[in-house]
Image 1: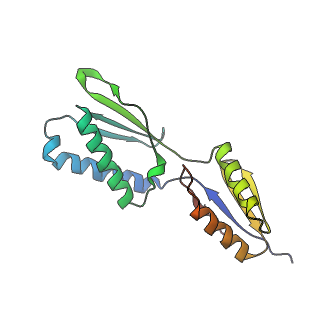
Image 2: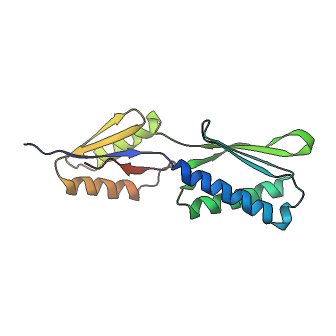
Image 3: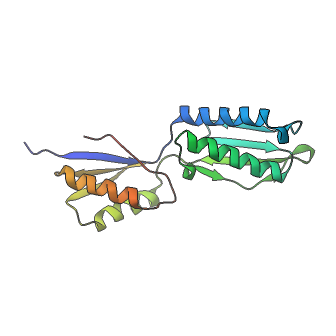
Length: 165
């Protein structure tokens, strides 16, 4: 019986934690004095994986970024998940900004992970499977070394490890 151990490298976020973070940000905006009467809206759309920020001026938009980032950190969501678009003019002289939520590894990102694992010269194989990368090996120690190396690497996208077998 040849035993093979594996784990998956994915890029995703917990939608419930994301919802909680956005709701906490909304509550803070409602209570803050500098946002009184500014008609500021934070809208989360999990189906389209976007957060829409709508406020009256640039200073309030920067404050919204700080509030949202703070709530994400407290809820354990990586800030690399957020991809801020450009602020655009909306009706009534207000500003609107769409923040895309990164989920799933793109092909180039998956290739970057597999190349890094192969460069470690461990007895493991990395295979791209859709939006995730499966790392397989006979030694749990080699797999743990690969996890440690991937955690130590600074990617421009968030990674998590799932499906340990």
